[in-house]
Amino acid sequence: MPSIMRFIVAGLFLFQSFRFDVNGVGLSYNFYEKTCPQVEYIVRDGLRPMFLTDPTSPAALLRLMFHDCQVQGCDASILVDPGHGSEATEMKASKNFGIKKRELISMVKSMVEAQCPQQVSCADILVLAAREAVAASGGPRINIPLGRRDSSHSPSYRLADALLPPATTGVADMLKIFANKGMTLAESVAILGAHTLGITHCSNIQNRLYGLKNGEFRAIEPTFAAFLRLTCQRGSLTSNLSFVLNDPTPFAFDNEYYVNAMRGRGLLRIDAEMVSNPKTARLVQHFAMNVDDFFRAFSSAFVKLSRYGVLTGKQGVIRKNCYEMK
Image 1 (cartoon, rainbow, N blue to C red):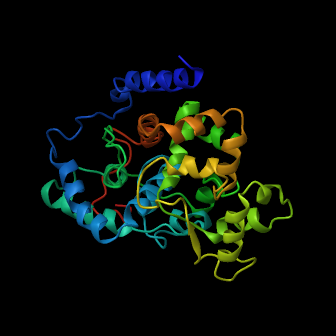
Image 2: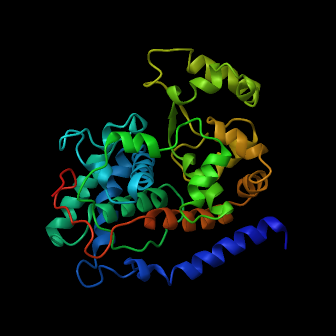
């Protein structure tokens, strides 16, 4: 068996083993069996028309979950209104620029409350919504444990800005971030495949295109580099409004992110570094050729991210309104 496959098989074996350990931290695959057995169907049916009318919604919901989970675990703190409390909340962080579709979680929460009052957390609904976003876009349907509780306080925007990785993050730092969440190397490369959905704002690639160190610019395929400089002009006042597609299929959850990166058409620094870094290059190549292995590794990484640092049991609260800390 090639070494690349041993990486992936070993990671998936660990995932299968992990599934039986989830109850130890208060999460389980049948958590709402008695209190709200229909919750997953409510979330799915509530979001389906939104996905059909607005194809940008899946990418937005997936990013919303990632940003929530990166700060202090998946606790729905990102949903709290920016003006709540004495200090600006997490949503005011500069690195949460472009976060949207928070209202969809609130909408689904209202639907769940109508059938299961004060039973299901906003945190679980947010993770379920992200799971549906992946599946509705053609990706895997991920089986996730539930039982998260909502935070009873929102972190400040300063903490969010400190913990969310910047657009300039390289391979070494990103691998460290994901390793701290229990991910294998294969899972760490796979979770970045979430960038196969959506867009990147020009403000996030200005440094690559016009920075003093032009080595990063040379790593971009020349024709694509010319296109990017035309679309994202130097110092443009509209760089927060203008954007480029993450890959040629921005509404489909597929492995085009890796294919694109191998062609020198990745947008962020890490896209280029993953292709050339000896730790990650073979995994990028493998996922570019084998979408099923990418889906399996992504699924296990998604579960690990969704369970990291969660509140369970009597910790936290079950918010009735996702926008408010009560």
